[in-house]
Image (tube, rainbow, N blue to C red; front, side, top):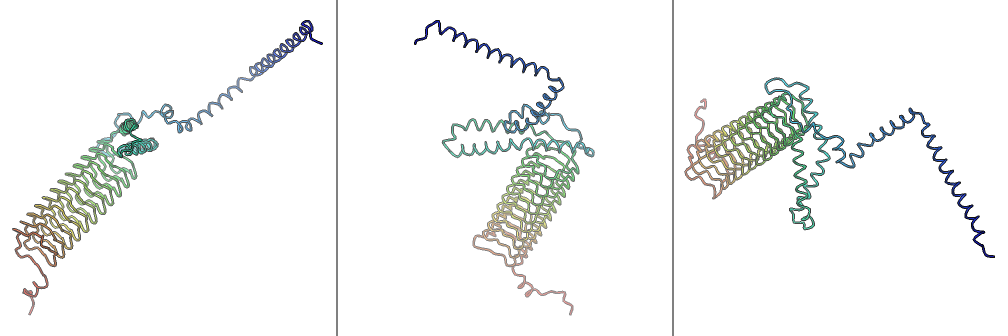
Length: 409
């Protein structure tokens, strides 16, 4: 039996009635929920908002650690970029607040740069890969170099100038001040044990009696700095500039001064045993009565240097340049002077017992009264024009031929 249109109309009307009833019930449900929410007490809603706000604030550091640019927006480092000078003068005693402020400032800089330093090391690695000819990195080289330059510039801006500050007797052990500007600062008797001052500018700074045990001063500028009685034991001074600096009575034992510049510096009575001075520039330096026992001076330039009464026992001075140097009464016993250039040097009354002079050039040198007992020579040792008056070649033979005249008979 087929359904007629007349029979279908009631069924359709019934379906539409059910749908309208369902929609009406849903609307009533939403209205009841809305009335319930509006019926909440204001205090309850404020508590909920407070809890939501606390939760968001607590999650901000975590979000900032995931996305560094959010951290910079949340807490911009405007204080580190301030050019306002710190209080304190180079003339009086430092205020404790001044020292603590500087230490806190440097600590904040170092903490903020720890994350950036990792990215800088990564970028530097990328740059090295680019320079190494890796074809896969060629497309990224301009971007990497630009990003690295921007980061390094931002780091330099964050490091404030500490020049002309009075930091005498300050406790700054282990502090990090790479590339810091400390010109003319007063750091007398300050404790900088283990400090990192690589590439720092300490020109004309007062560093008298400063403690720099195991400090890092690689490529630092210490031109005309006052380092009298300073303790630089086991310090790193590779390629540092100490020209015209005063290191009178300073302690540099076991220090690494490879390729350092001491031109015109005063190292009189300095304590330098086992110090590495290979390839160092010591032209016109004063080393009067300096202790250089077992020091390494290979290929060092000591032209015109004053080493009067210096103690160079067992020093390694192979291929060193000692032209016109003054070694009057110097202790050079067992020293290695192989291949050294001692042209016109003054070695009068010097002690050269058991020294190695193989291939040394002593042309025009003054060796009057020097002790050359058991000295090692070879056919390349050059004594042309040298003054060998009263030179002692063999102590035992000399004592046998010239017995003591003051024997009490």
